[in-house]
Image (cartoon, rainbow over all chains, first blue to last red; front, side, top):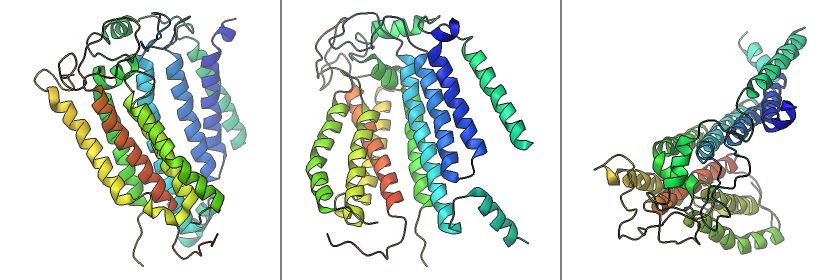
Length: 120
Length: 88
Length: 157
């Protein structure tokens, strides 16, 4: 019964699990970047869902329907976390472009094999 | 054999995360809310803003926003350095 | 990088001022409605990305990289200057709230229709962060689009 009530937390755990699976078991570089981005989104969803209060509305006083409001601090910290995730993803994609320019392919096993052959 | 071990450790990771996430307070009933009650009650009197989230981001916790602006700046500089055009 | 067909280019040029106005509205009313500097800056940057995708290599007269760099520096320095404004009490002290300057009226507790004249340093900081975010994201999009070579034929549509 507690599992059904805590469903947002479990979906966050599943998102993080899928992201870790994609980051470890796939060999294409873009799929690894997508997996790491999924982990970051799951963590942001968990942060926002921590501040919910039952039966409350958004913490904005313009035409507010009630004075019972959710906590505003986790939303503020999630804004910062979203921008940091964007910075990380932009840098990872820039490195993927540079790898493609140098080696001509994006599969990590072929790149590792080419580098091992070149060093022998 | 390596893939089997990887799958097994992934299942253990997800199970422990679900177990840990359910130990946090129930969804909808937060435990200690004194700081956020102060923010909601005083953000129109002190900061004169109708939006409590913007008041928290730029006034009560402005230092975190300064750090985030620096991270964005560093990311733009990093991308511009990696993707520069070399001569020849 | 090639642009797209004539229909896409015409519609992009028609929609561009509306996207910029919507983003500026979100940034300006950040202390009254949901939104603020980061969200409005992201909306304007998506408008810049629309111009880069629709025009390809010929978008350099609409979205210029030198102008974006100057805008980003101005936004960062304005944010720091506003933070140092109330250093008499503490760092990031809201000196303009409840005083007589441009955005300095007072608001009492309770639900009200929003008044634009309130907020203290919040509208100025929203504009500084909005300029910084739009210039940063626009620079990333422009840099990543024009990275592959210059020896391609332009289509003559």
